[in-house]
Amino acid sequence: MLYDPRRWAMPRRPERLAVFEKDVFIGSTPQEVFDFCCNGEKFQLISPDRITPAKDNDEITVLPAHVYSFYHWMAPILPVHWVVYIDDYQPGHYYVDLQLRGPFRYFRHTHRCTPVGGGTAYTDYIEYCSPYGALIDRTFVRRSFERIFKHRHRRMVELLEAGGKATTESRSSSVAGSSR
Image (cartoon, rainbow, N blue to C red):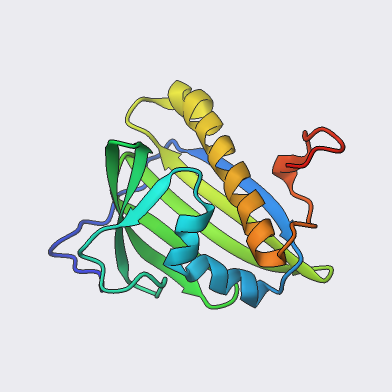
């Protein structure tokens, strides 16, 4: 659905934010990676936790200036409702989703695809501020993001490369010979 300023207010960017950034190399073209990331059904496949679209969505493909609503199931019985707005969108290169409603005071997530040596450097860049303060953001939230994005990047590589031959920053600590 298109953004309606009467329904949702744009969040104000706080002065103090935490930043999380994670990169992965994927042996697919930037356009293939971008299209994959824009497909809401693929989003559900890469998440370590259950994600379900809310009923008020008219589309689950990322489009500029659109709003998307979904539930992130923190446990099998605890749905956390998110509403995000596509704040910036450059086809084949990047898009930015901005939380309008959800668990954070502020959450802005850039998904960037950059051509690199026969593939794509895919970057998740998140500016965030939880309601619990800087210490929690730098510790608990950061560890949670590390877990989530390690899983998401691994799944993206597996699904886009049909075999997962790429290397990722989040795998750098894997044990040699591991089947993970």
